[in-house]
Image (cartoon, rainbow, N blue to C red):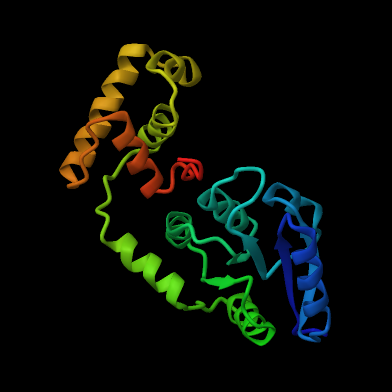
Length: 215
């Protein structure tokens, strides 16, 4: 039908994907254009997409903000679809412009309502989404540059200053200067980062690194 919304699902659990497919297939106003296991595979789906329903935690280790950005570049809205309880990952998705979150445990009618709302560009509000946004608003932005974010993500993940220098093409002393500048910016924002562990925590809070589930 002419007014049908075209959607895609990014989900790497086959049973969940099959259930989603069967639910959407019964809706005349929704077209499931494709199902893929990661965002990079969306390029295999031809044509315009109104909405991508995105699993928050994928097996490829990709970060929510990178996935949301890639989907937006394709011109589609994003609805997060998750069973995870990771508040920081939810914050990262919210900060990146996803329209809302729906739990995998939700009932079919609520899921379909959320899909229709998000496909039309509307926000999908819920307790999880609101709590993540409210908590995120309490974190002052350290205003790191793109280069500072890159260096923080490498250094805070355990790389030495020398290996960061090799990766970025900068001198080791320059990397050390960047790290010092990053620490100052976080201190100015009221979020001290005196140790490497602190830097890791700040990077996770800001969605630059995924939280270590084993930590």
